[in-house]
Length: 268
Image (cartoon, rainbow, N blue to C red; front, top):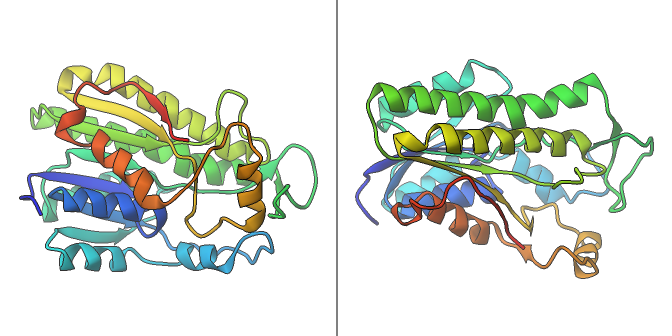
C-alpha cells in the first residue's frame, strides 16, 4: 500500500465497477470517498435477485475492506439527483480526506425505457415507455450530476492552484443510441459530451478527462440469456468482471496516464 497522496470521489461505489474502482485506487494509495445510494428495485423476472441485493448494499463493506488492507476511505450515502449534493460531497471529502484530485463518475440512475410499447426486452427484463419521469430519473443522475461534479472539481482545483487532476466517466451505448434503454443511452451520451468538453477546457490546469465504455460487466444482472446474447454478438467480445474494468480506470487515474485525455475508450 502506497502513501495517501491523492484523494478521489467515486460515485456508485457500493457494488460492481464503482466498488472495484474504489478498492483499486485505495490499493494505489489514493484516499477514497465512496458515495452511493441504496435502491430497492421492483422484482423483475428478467433480473437476478443478486443484482437487486447489490443495489441495496451500502458502501460500508467496501470501506471496511479498504481499511482492513491499510487504505483510507469513507462512505457517504447521497442522492445525486439533488443538485446540492456535488458541493456537499466535495466539502466532506476535503474535511475528512483532503482536496480532491480524482473524480470517477460511475453512478447510474438506470431505468429501461423504450419508444416501442411492450412489456419486456429480448432478455426478459421489464420495459417502461419513455415518460417525463423516466427521462428525469435518468438525466438527473447520469447527466446533471456528472456535469455538476466536474464543475465543482474544476472550481476547487482552480481555487487552490492545483496542477494535477483526473476525471473518468463511464458510459454505454454508441452512435446509434441504446435501444430499449433509450433515456439511459441519451443521458450517458450527454455525460460523454461534458467529459470531452472538460478534457479541452481543463487541460491547461493539468486535468485529464476520459470516458470508459465497459463491456458487458457482471455486477449481478447477467443471466444465461445475456451470456448467450454476448456469445452470438458480432460487437460484444467478453463478459468482464468489475475488477477488470477497474484496472483500466485506475490506470487512467494514475501518474502514468498523463498523455491520455479526451478519449472515449471502448472495452470489449
